[in-house]
Image (cartoon, rainbow, N blue to C red):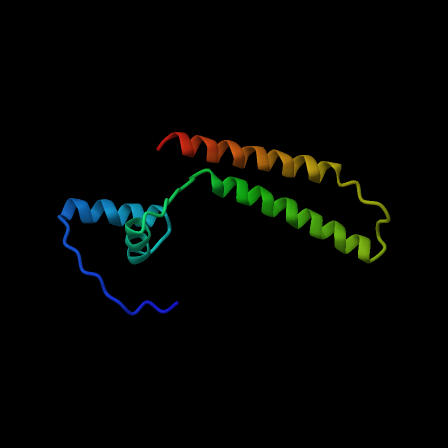
Length: 105
């Protein structure tokens, strides 16, 4: 959706810096952060997600490599038990992180 309306607001230097830091921390533009906040949207930043996302990407990469080997007939059987356990571990970590974040409100 095209954003074609402008909203002007005044803030002290301290307020401006706090909003700017929160927007950067949430990886949103200042405009998006202010609009979402004004509309009552909850903006949750979970710092630990970077490690979880990295681990999930590694799992996906390994699974992709096994798929390529299976398609080229270099392997016949793939035991996915380890992948399932690793993904379950990641889900548990994500669940814990979101529960912790919800309690800090």
